[in-house]
Image 1 (tube, rainbow, N blue to C red):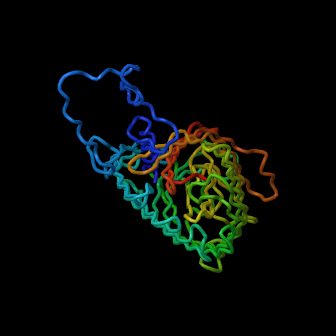
Image 2 (image 1 turned 90 degrees about the vertical axis):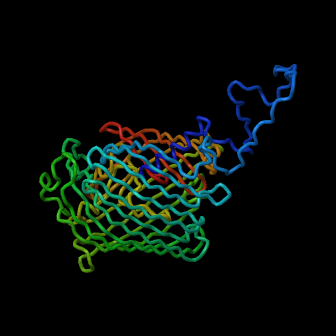
Image 3 (image 1 turned 180 degrees about the vertical axis):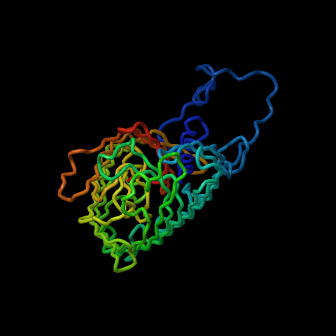
Length: 459
């Protein structure tokens, strides 16, 4: 999803260079073309007088709206985009992405096909295929697959219906197969040293099923079931292997789990994908047990609050607070603990239920800090700075300065406010309403600058 996110943001930025068309019903008047007279000018009022002599040949008819024109990139059925992306864990990617967009005739994106070929400084040559479908506000699905020359492989699919919670039931299924050789581990705890960085590869496969009963359009109770198999192997980067530096780390031999969780959600947001007011409150509890298909036993509980404050037509303050506890987690594998770091996209849910263990902290990549328990908060000022019609879809460019804080801790008796890690930065968002958000966020924490990109808001 990294490269498609950059494409969405880039496409929106292109509107600022004149490739987009300002909406006809925009209340502001677009500036006249450089070097041309004002449309309201008349001879004798600053405009040149009509030339004498024989009439000139009639101008060529304009290209019909929606018709293909080689000189009009907004009419192209395929958007070729050069790729340049970076990530604190994965390194630098370069390549070429082809994006096929299909809308519903009303300016809303219906389908996205986005294959690419790329090269990574460590993983070598690779490629990906993405199909994202938005048949309605209530049903969405996607399929993504890709591989690289050195070890990396990824296949993922997700389907959800009942997103708007207008009926009694909502459903989601999610499948993931992954070999990720970019993972980093610095040690457990909130004081893990950056200089202790190690590398490993996660090999995992899981299927997830989620069913929710909607008491109202705002209140639901959801059951989440996820059987998962994990193996740990040597990574692809020039860092020590995690198993050699931390030989007693629980979970190094992989394992299996069948995790069961219940979520109670109260959701008053005006949109699941692009919220601008309202909020979400979630409480959850879960269990994995050796007595039923798990190699280790642990319990968990926690909660999340999101709220969106519209300051003006263009500015929304987005606030987020998350906590998760694993009491008595003496045998919890490190890959099932709470992770602080990265953009938080992790194991997302199209139903917007917080199923991921990875929590947004844009000071470094995924898993910078790992332990049983976590407390994290985020605030963004999402500001819409430009809007235009682009590639037959309404595009919005948004800037979002942000502040993230977070802390992991081992014991539930600890006070999780004594060592909060701050990070700050600026987010660039490309929005294609009503469903698609691509982001490129530049953050700075105690370990330097980090760049993240992906699809959907971090929270």
